[in-house]
Length: 86
Image 1 (cartoon, rainbow, N blue to C red):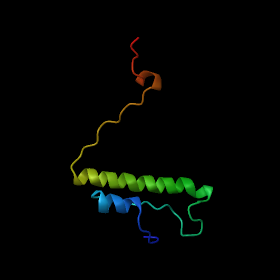
Image 2 (cartoon, one colour):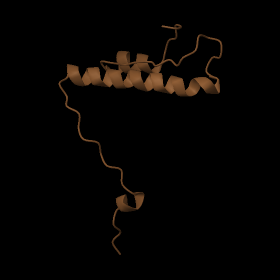
Image 3 (cartoon, helix red, strand yellow):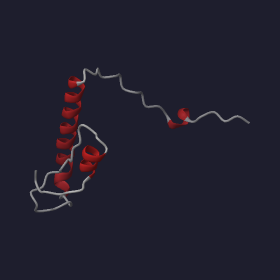
Image 4 (cartoon, rainbow, N blue to C red):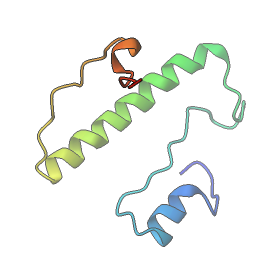
């Protein structure tokens, strides 16, 4: 843990809402830049965060014996509009 903070959404999720797993992701910084990362740190931070979330999701799937589902195909927005009755 980089620093202590109370009252975050992960605290509410675990303590009040009763969600079994709650996390707070912290981006790369050692305190020098705070919440404003230099541009050259943004992509590496995203890559690291994605890898962490993906790994946690894979672990959860393994723990709960869940198989991955095929990806939902992306369609043109025009195709997804509901039909209008006149």
